[in-house]
Picture 1 (cartoon, rainbow, N blue to C red):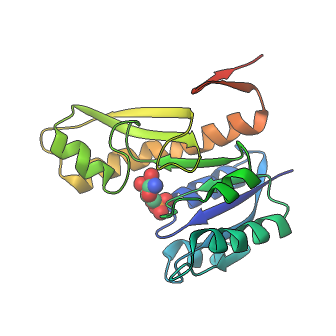
Picture 2 (picture 1 turned 90 degrees about the horizontal axis):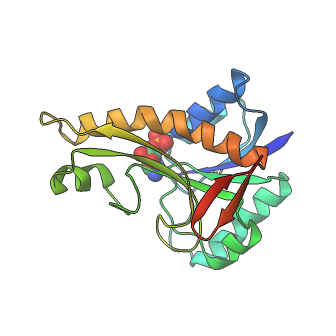
Length: 200
Ligand code: GRF
């Protein structure tokens, strides 16, 4: 069984969507551990309620690689083979990325490479784009970079505020994260430069 390690910092709705997909038999995997860098993360409480292994590894005042070593140690102890960042508000060190080569995914609420970083939905709104969406990609040391596995598009309506747009995008996030995990776990892809291409 594929063992997922999920890293969160807050609400955890993407984590819950993954957990729901597993419970519904839509994803052949199990959640080995949920780790939050923020002790107050709502997602941490939700993980505990679901009876999952849920740990907080506080990041405050810690040097990046020292922190990542603690997290990697926990992931290794739980024999995690795929790491899913789900609203984890930290860049990973080269050490972390090197420990799980092409086995770390992230979800971002824009059509990358547009609007990386914080408040992607607000960036999209203020830029005046007519469509935005979300992206699941492999993680490297750079911010919201790495080869793209899946994207979904949503319209930006004239009446939108940040909340309305974020909610529309979030529904798609919950859908495509499971799809992207399934596709990576199937192993039926190859990475050609920046392109993730299906293989038979
Ligand atoms: C999502 O919009 C995700 O794309 C971004 O952070 C947000 C996390 O939301 N990286 P949640 O914690 O999964 O509800």
